Length: 160
Image 1 (cartoon, rainbow, N blue to C red):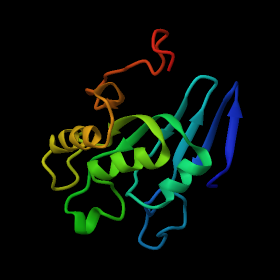
Image 2: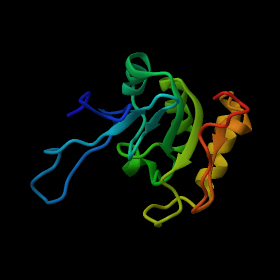
Image 3: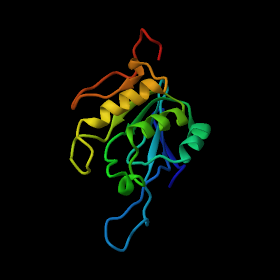
């Protein structure tokens, strides 16, 4: 359930509410939860936003569970906005989620893999980077990774 957690070997995963809906069949709308996750280890605190639209819940998450070192946030699947606004954030809203939860670093995800919606396939990362810079994130803390790319979350020389 939301707010429940599980700990193992110094890592605690907490299920957190996000803004979406659930359905697998025509008669089971919203009978299961949708969630994001706080992943707290000894050296890092991560937020995985899953599939989510923007909502006031993120301010509460920031107050109750933040700040976060890194937030992985969905930036695609937002057009047409009249249909998608209830389940997927725009790139600008993803940056606002990062600010609301107190994320030091934000990572754009959930874009470009499968063409589900009408936005141009390479538009989300461009808008995310522009919004992140406008929102006060330095390029070192604003990531849109290439498919298959990995990056260390902790580097001995930066202390973070």
